[in-house]
Length: 86
Image (cartoon, rainbow, N blue to C red):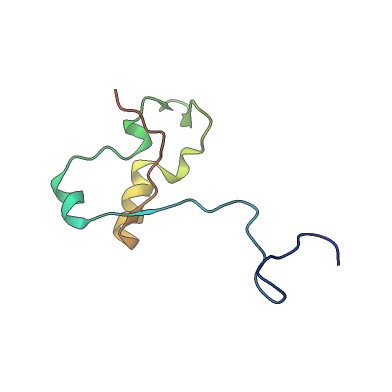
């Protein structure tokens, strides 16, 4: 059988072709106590009119509504590593 060779071995799940987004655990005390900038809406690379990231990233996972929902659901967030605050 041709195709991707699974390094995990026969019968195991196929490796991901696209890596999943990394989510960081957030301390509830820190989330409530500090005014942390974590969303696209806070970043200088975000164009709010077009809802795009000017450096080419998909903003869907980093929008404030998505981040807040993810935090309330699982206690973690997908922080953008390129956020730039003015």
